[in-house]
Amino acid sequence: PLHELRLAVFHVLIFFPSTMATWGSVVGSPGSTGQEGLFLPAIVTPLSPNVDNSGDKKLDVPSLRKLIKQMFEQGVSGLYVGGNTGEGYLLSEHTRKELAAVCSELAKTAGKLSVVHVGHAQTSVAIRLAKHAISVGASAISAMPPLASEKSFEAIKSFYRELAAAAHPLPVLAYHIPAVTHTNLTVDQMLQLLDIEGVVGFKYTDPDLLKLYACVSRRPNAVLLHGISSIQVPALLYGARGGITGGGGNVLPRCMSQLHSHFQNGDVAAATQEQRVYNRMECEWGSALTTADCKVILQTRGLIAHATVAQGDDMAAAQQRELADFSANINESPF
Image (cartoon, rainbow, N blue to C red; front, side):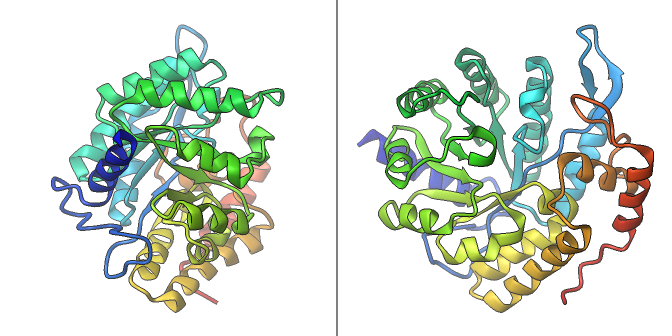
């Protein structure tokens, strides 16, 4: 069937891209070893405090390029662009297109992946963003369903059908993040979405690992990439094929990428040591890192020029100083 063919093509492009020598073979089949792990940071979107003619904060392209260069040097597999950490829903359509173009260009040049999040409250805008992602050379697209608590599952399924058809030939990763969408998909509903032609997996940001296990047990070729930094190793043990995370991906990209490489090579103990590096940082800070937290840390490190967020006020100066002091003590040594 055509859907199975597209899934096979996705695995070839994502996991065995002939033009991407740095990848080798990232993931051959579930449970395989001797290959690189698959980890993509959900990259923050560097913004300037200056606004454009529409009153939107401008994309800080020099900072974006600098940040991406550093992430690629740390060994990540590619980028997840304009998602929840990337403030995609809060950016204008123009800025999202500019962001996708820069990230996709740099990813192609470096032999890396670019998965562009195109979710929007209006399906028509999501489709325009998907078509733009195709035009700039993205590797795949992803999308949260429209954020509305009254959306029925049939409406969500219809959204992904329309999006996958418009995104052809790019594969689509659905996005399960119930803390944001307030829609907690069941295993059966996830399987129904995976049966849509062109939908090849999920960005799965949910601590419910039994649901993840049930899903991959019934769809072993599905690409489920887990989205919570603090439980990457447990998610891999339950069947995730890799990870896409914001806090760990932005602040400790080398740690996260090594975690996945160790696990893929069968060294669970070494992967667990890397997991402890991140978890110690999160425990010492007292909570998961927000987008604003990540931006302050990256600014402190000189990787982005401003800690500007897309909407609302930037972090108070006193809190920024506290986070900058904390960031200075972050190291990558395990317990």
